[in-house]
Length: 328
Image (cartoon, rainbow, N blue to C red; front, side, top):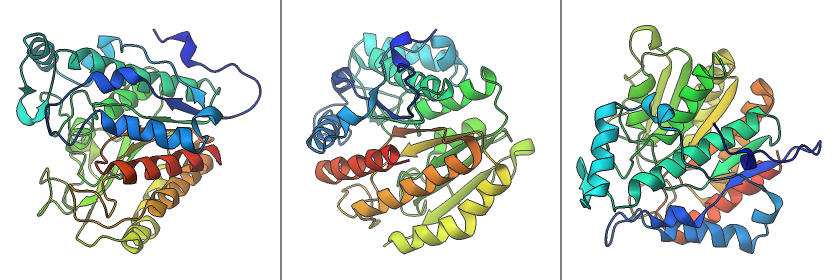
Protein backbone atom coordinates (compact mmCIF):
# COMPACT_ATOMS: atom_id res chain seq x y z
CA UNK A 1 0.00 0.00 0.00
CA UNK A 2 2.84 2.36 0.85
CA UNK A 3 6.31 2.60 -0.63
CA UNK A 4 8.63 0.77 1.73
CA UNK A 5 11.34 3.32 0.96
CA UNK A 6 9.27 5.84 2.85
CA UNK A 7 10.22 4.14 6.09
CA UNK A 8 13.62 5.07 7.44
CA UNK A 9 15.89 2.32 8.78
CA UNK A 10 15.30 1.82 12.47
CA UNK A 11 18.61 2.78 14.02
CA UNK A 12 17.21 3.61 17.43
CA UNK A 13 17.41 7.35 16.80
CA UNK A 14 14.45 9.62 16.27
CA UNK A 15 14.66 12.01 13.37
CA UNK A 16 12.74 14.40 11.17
CA UNK A 17 11.42 13.12 7.87
CA UNK A 18 11.45 15.33 4.80
CA UNK A 19 9.43 15.12 1.60
CA UNK A 20 11.10 16.80 -1.36
CA UNK A 21 10.84 15.85 -5.03
CA UNK A 22 11.45 17.83 -8.20
CA UNK A 23 8.39 16.24 -9.78
CA UNK A 24 6.16 18.52 -7.69
CA UNK A 25 7.48 21.41 -9.77
CA UNK A 26 5.85 19.95 -12.90
CA UNK A 27 2.43 21.10 -11.71
CA UNK A 28 1.95 24.35 -13.62
CA UNK A 29 -0.99 26.53 -12.63
CA UNK A 30 -0.41 28.97 -15.48
CA UNK A 31 1.62 32.08 -16.37
CA UNK A 32 1.94 34.57 -13.53
CA UNK A 33 0.18 32.31 -11.04
CA UNK A 34 1.41 32.86 -7.46
CA UNK A 35 1.37 29.13 -6.72
CA UNK A 36 4.36 28.54 -8.94
CA UNK A 37 7.03 25.84 -9.17
CA UNK A 38 9.70 28.25 -7.93
CA UNK A 39 8.18 28.02 -4.45
CA UNK A 40 9.59 24.53 -3.98
CA UNK A 41 12.87 25.43 -5.63
CA UNK A 42 13.25 28.22 -3.06
CA UNK A 43 12.52 25.85 -0.17
CA UNK A 44 14.94 23.26 -1.51
CA UNK A 45 17.68 25.88 -1.82
CA UNK A 46 16.96 27.29 1.63
CA UNK A 47 17.21 23.90 3.28
CA UNK A 48 20.35 22.95 1.39
CA UNK A 49 22.17 26.21 2.17
CA UNK A 50 21.60 25.64 5.87
CA UNK A 51 22.54 21.95 5.70
CA UNK A 52 19.11 20.97 6.97
CA UNK A 53 18.13 18.61 4.17
CA UNK A 54 21.08 16.31 4.86
CA UNK A 55 20.06 16.08 8.53
CA UNK A 56 16.59 14.82 7.66
CA UNK A 57 15.40 11.37 6.66
CA UNK A 58 14.11 11.42 3.07
CA UNK A 59 10.52 10.25 2.70
CA UNK A 60 9.69 8.43 -0.53
CA UNK A 61 7.28 9.99 -2.98
CA UNK A 62 4.79 7.59 -4.52
CA UNK A 63 1.27 8.03 -5.97
CA UNK A 64 -1.58 7.76 -3.52
CA UNK A 65 -3.91 4.80 -3.80
CA UNK A 66 -7.08 6.45 -5.07
CA UNK A 67 -9.20 4.78 -2.41
CA UNK A 68 -7.62 7.18 0.08
CA UNK A 69 -8.59 10.15 -2.07
CA UNK A 70 -12.09 8.67 -2.42
CA UNK A 71 -12.42 8.66 1.36
CA UNK A 72 -12.30 12.46 1.25
CA UNK A 73 -13.47 13.54 -2.22
CA UNK A 74 -16.47 12.52 -4.31
CA UNK A 75 -16.06 10.17 -7.25
CA UNK A 76 -17.52 12.83 -9.53
CA UNK A 77 -14.93 15.42 -8.53
CA UNK A 78 -12.03 12.99 -8.91
CA UNK A 79 -13.24 12.02 -12.39
CA UNK A 80 -13.77 15.64 -13.43
CA UNK A 81 -10.28 16.60 -12.30
CA UNK A 82 -8.65 13.69 -14.09
CA UNK A 83 -10.59 14.44 -17.27
CA UNK A 84 -9.86 18.19 -17.13
CA UNK A 85 -6.13 17.52 -16.87
CA UNK A 86 -6.20 14.94 -19.65
CA UNK A 87 -8.10 17.38 -21.89
CA UNK A 88 -5.57 20.14 -21.26
CA UNK A 89 -8.01 22.54 -19.64
CA UNK A 90 -6.41 25.59 -17.99
CA UNK A 91 -8.26 25.28 -14.66
CA UNK A 92 -10.75 23.17 -12.72
CA UNK A 93 -13.92 24.61 -11.14
CA UNK A 94 -12.52 28.10 -10.47
CA UNK A 95 -9.98 30.14 -12.41
CA UNK A 96 -7.67 30.26 -9.38
CA UNK A 97 -7.20 26.50 -9.54
CA UNK A 98 -4.93 26.33 -12.56
CA UNK A 99 -3.95 22.93 -13.92
CA UNK A 100 -1.83 21.36 -16.62
CA UNK A 101 -1.88 17.87 -18.17
CA UNK A 102 0.37 16.50 -15.40
CA UNK A 103 -1.51 18.06 -12.48
CA UNK A 104 -3.66 15.04 -11.64
CA UNK A 105 -0.67 12.73 -11.30
CA UNK A 106 1.35 15.33 -9.39
CA UNK A 107 -1.57 15.77 -6.98
CA UNK A 108 -1.53 11.99 -6.50
CA UNK A 109 2.18 12.21 -5.66
CA UNK A 110 1.59 15.01 -3.12
CA UNK A 111 -1.11 13.07 -1.28
CA UNK A 112 0.88 9.83 -1.47
CA UNK A 113 4.03 11.43 -0.09
CA UNK A 114 2.06 12.94 2.79
CA UNK A 115 0.64 9.52 3.64
CA UNK A 116 4.14 8.02 3.47
CA UNK A 117 5.26 10.62 6.00
CA UNK A 118 2.36 9.74 8.30
CA UNK A 119 3.26 6.06 8.00
CA UNK A 120 6.90 6.75 8.84
CA UNK A 121 5.85 8.59 11.99
CA UNK A 122 3.31 5.93 12.97
CA UNK A 123 5.99 3.26 12.51
CA UNK A 124 8.24 5.15 14.91
CA UNK A 125 11.06 5.50 12.40
CA UNK A 126 10.89 9.30 12.42
CA UNK A 127 9.41 11.42 15.16
CA UNK A 128 8.01 14.10 12.86
CA UNK A 129 8.10 15.18 9.21
CA UNK A 130 7.71 18.16 6.88
CA UNK A 131 6.17 17.66 3.46
CA UNK A 132 7.24 20.25 0.88
CA UNK A 133 4.53 19.33 -1.59
CA UNK A 134 2.40 21.04 -4.18
CA UNK A 135 -0.31 21.52 -5.23
CA UNK A 136 -1.52 22.53 -1.77
CA UNK A 137 -4.72 21.15 -0.32
CA UNK A 138 -6.61 22.85 2.49
CA UNK A 139 -9.09 24.78 0.29
CA UNK A 140 -10.16 21.67 -1.64
CA UNK A 141 -13.75 20.77 -0.78
CA UNK A 142 -15.17 17.28 -0.93
CA UNK A 143 -16.80 17.97 -4.30
CA UNK A 144 -14.72 20.73 -5.90
CA UNK A 145 -11.42 22.56 -6.15
CA UNK A 146 -10.85 25.97 -4.63
CA UNK A 147 -7.93 28.32 -4.07
CA UNK A 148 -5.06 26.57 -5.92
CA UNK A 149 -5.91 23.24 -4.20
CA UNK A 150 -6.73 19.94 -5.94
CA UNK A 151 -6.70 17.11 -3.37
CA UNK A 152 -7.04 17.96 0.31
CA UNK A 153 -3.77 16.36 1.39
CA UNK A 154 -4.13 16.96 5.11
CA UNK A 155 -7.72 15.68 5.16
CA UNK A 156 -6.58 12.51 3.37
CA UNK A 157 -3.93 12.02 6.09
CA UNK A 158 -6.40 12.60 8.92
CA UNK A 159 -8.97 10.23 7.43
CA UNK A 160 -6.30 7.57 7.04
CA UNK A 161 -5.26 7.91 10.68
CA UNK A 162 -8.87 7.62 11.82
CA UNK A 163 -10.09 4.86 9.56
CA UNK A 164 -7.02 2.69 9.05
CA UNK A 165 -4.98 3.26 12.19
CA UNK A 166 -8.03 3.48 14.43
CA UNK A 167 -7.06 6.73 16.10
CA UNK A 168 -9.85 8.49 17.96
CA UNK A 169 -8.42 12.03 18.24
CA UNK A 170 -6.50 13.85 15.50
CA UNK A 171 -5.59 17.53 15.74
CA UNK A 172 -5.33 19.62 12.57
CA UNK A 173 -3.80 23.02 13.23
CA UNK A 174 -3.94 25.33 10.22
CA UNK A 175 -1.84 28.49 10.42
CA UNK A 176 -2.05 29.39 6.74
CA UNK A 177 -3.22 32.99 6.40
CA UNK A 178 -6.27 31.82 4.44
CA UNK A 179 -8.96 29.78 6.19
CA UNK A 180 -8.84 26.05 5.48
CA UNK A 181 -12.45 25.87 4.33
CA UNK A 182 -12.13 22.46 2.70
CA UNK A 183 -10.61 20.81 5.75
CA UNK A 184 -13.21 22.38 8.03
CA UNK A 185 -16.15 21.25 5.92
CA UNK A 186 -14.84 17.70 5.47
CA UNK A 187 -14.62 17.18 9.25
CA UNK A 188 -17.16 19.61 10.67
CA UNK A 189 -19.47 16.80 11.84
CA UNK A 190 -16.68 14.52 13.12
CA UNK A 191 -15.76 14.86 16.82
CA UNK A 192 -12.63 12.77 16.23
CA UNK A 193 -10.95 15.74 14.52
CA UNK A 194 -10.20 18.99 16.30
CA UNK A 195 -9.72 21.57 13.55
CA UNK A 196 -8.14 24.84 14.68
CA UNK A 197 -7.46 27.60 12.18
CA UNK A 198 -5.69 30.93 12.65
CA UNK A 199 -6.24 33.09 9.58
CA UNK A 200 -6.86 36.54 8.21
CA UNK A 201 -10.36 37.78 8.96
CA UNK A 202 -12.86 36.38 6.44
CA UNK A 203 -14.46 39.79 6.08
CA UNK A 204 -11.39 40.99 4.20
CA UNK A 205 -9.61 37.87 2.98
CA UNK A 206 -10.23 34.82 0.79
CA UNK A 207 -12.14 32.49 1.03
CA UNK A 208 -14.62 34.43 3.17
CA UNK A 209 -15.16 31.59 5.65
CA UNK A 210 -13.76 30.91 9.09
CA UNK A 211 -15.75 33.21 11.33
CA UNK A 212 -15.52 32.48 15.04
CA UNK A 213 -19.15 31.34 15.16
CA UNK A 214 -18.33 28.46 12.78
CA UNK A 215 -17.84 25.74 15.41
CA UNK A 216 -18.80 22.54 13.62
CA UNK A 217 -22.14 20.81 13.24
CA UNK A 218 -24.04 17.95 14.84
CA UNK A 219 -21.77 15.63 16.78
CA UNK A 220 -18.85 17.75 15.64
CA UNK A 221 -20.07 20.97 17.19
CA UNK A 222 -17.31 22.51 19.28
CA UNK A 223 -14.56 20.61 17.46
CA UNK A 224 -13.99 23.44 14.97
CA UNK A 225 -12.22 26.50 16.36
CA UNK A 226 -11.69 29.48 14.10
CA UNK A 227 -9.50 32.39 15.15
CA UNK A 228 -9.92 35.19 12.58
CA UNK A 229 -7.26 37.88 12.79
CA UNK A 230 -7.52 41.48 11.64
CA UNK A 231 -4.51 43.39 10.31
CA UNK A 232 -1.81 43.98 11.26
CA UNK A 233 -1.90 40.54 12.91
CA UNK A 234 1.54 40.50 14.46
CA UNK A 235 3.04 37.77 16.61
CA UNK A 236 1.60 39.09 19.86
CA UNK A 237 -1.90 38.34 18.56
CA UNK A 238 -0.90 34.79 17.70
CA UNK A 239 0.74 34.31 21.09
CA UNK A 240 -2.46 35.41 22.81
CA UNK A 241 -4.50 33.00 20.68
CA UNK A 242 -2.25 30.09 21.60
CA UNK A 243 -2.30 30.95 25.29
CA UNK A 244 -5.99 31.71 25.68
CA UNK A 245 -7.66 29.44 23.13
CA UNK A 246 -5.46 26.86 21.44
CA UNK A 247 -3.54 25.35 24.33
CA UNK A 248 -6.64 24.89 26.54
CA UNK A 249 -8.57 23.29 23.68
CA UNK A 250 -5.73 20.95 22.77
CA UNK A 251 -5.23 19.96 26.41
CA UNK A 252 -8.90 19.04 26.69
CA UNK A 253 -8.84 17.11 23.39
CA UNK A 254 -5.52 15.26 24.05
CA UNK A 255 -4.71 14.41 20.41
CA UNK A 256 -3.11 11.15 19.37
CA UNK A 257 -1.53 12.75 16.30
CA UNK A 258 -0.83 16.35 15.25
CA UNK A 259 -1.17 17.51 11.64
CA UNK A 260 -0.21 21.04 10.61
CA UNK A 261 -1.34 22.95 7.52
CA UNK A 262 1.88 24.94 7.35
CA UNK A 263 1.20 27.95 5.19
CA UNK A 264 3.84 30.68 5.45
CA UNK A 265 1.76 33.45 3.89
CA UNK A 266 0.97 35.40 7.06
CA UNK A 267 4.54 36.69 6.71
CA UNK A 268 4.78 40.48 6.49
CA UNK A 269 6.45 40.22 3.05
CA UNK A 270 3.84 37.96 1.50
CA UNK A 271 1.97 39.60 -1.38
CA UNK A 272 -1.38 37.83 -0.90
CA UNK A 273 -2.32 38.84 2.64
CA UNK A 274 -2.13 41.83 5.02
CA UNK A 275 -0.81 40.17 8.20
CA UNK A 276 2.65 40.81 9.59
CA UNK A 277 4.32 37.78 11.07
CA UNK A 278 8.10 37.64 11.04
CA UNK A 279 10.19 34.67 9.96
CA UNK A 280 10.95 34.06 13.64
CA UNK A 281 7.22 33.76 14.33
CA UNK A 282 7.15 30.47 12.45
CA UNK A 283 9.93 29.13 14.63
CA UNK A 284 7.92 30.03 17.70
CA UNK A 285 4.73 28.44 16.35
CA UNK A 286 6.65 25.32 15.40
CA UNK A 287 7.89 25.10 18.97
CA UNK A 288 4.28 25.27 20.14
CA UNK A 289 3.06 22.38 17.99
CA UNK A 290 6.14 20.32 18.74
CA UNK A 291 5.42 20.76 22.44
CA UNK A 292 1.80 19.72 21.92
CA UNK A 293 2.85 16.61 20.04
CA UNK A 294 5.44 15.71 22.67
CA UNK A 295 3.01 16.26 25.52
CA UNK A 296 0.02 14.38 24.17
CA UNK A 297 1.09 11.87 21.52
CA UNK A 298 4.75 10.96 21.83
CA UNK A 299 5.86 13.65 19.38
CA UNK A 300 3.82 12.38 16.43
CA UNK A 301 3.58 15.34 14.04
CA UNK A 302 3.46 15.84 10.29
CA UNK A 303 3.30 19.27 8.65
CA UNK A 304 2.27 19.88 5.06
CA UNK A 305 3.11 22.92 2.98
CA UNK A 306 0.14 25.07 2.05
CA UNK A 307 0.67 28.74 1.09
CA UNK A 308 3.60 31.16 1.07
CA UNK A 309 4.26 33.28 -2.00
CA UNK A 310 7.22 35.56 -1.29
CA UNK A 311 10.08 33.27 -2.26
CA UNK A 312 12.70 34.54 0.19
CA UNK A 313 10.26 34.70 3.11
CA UNK A 314 8.96 31.24 2.24
CA UNK A 315 12.45 29.75 2.07
CA UNK A 316 13.54 31.32 5.35
CA UNK A 317 10.34 30.44 7.21
CA UNK A 318 10.24 26.84 5.98
CA UNK A 319 13.90 26.37 6.85
CA UNK A 320 13.31 27.62 10.39
CA UNK A 321 10.29 25.33 10.65
CA UNK A 322 12.41 22.31 9.71
CA UNK A 323 15.23 23.43 12.01
CA UNK A 324 12.82 23.46 14.95
CA UNK A 325 11.38 20.07 13.98
CA UNK A 326 14.91 18.68 14.00
CA UNK A 327 15.44 20.10 17.48
CA UNK A 328 12.36 18.31 18.84
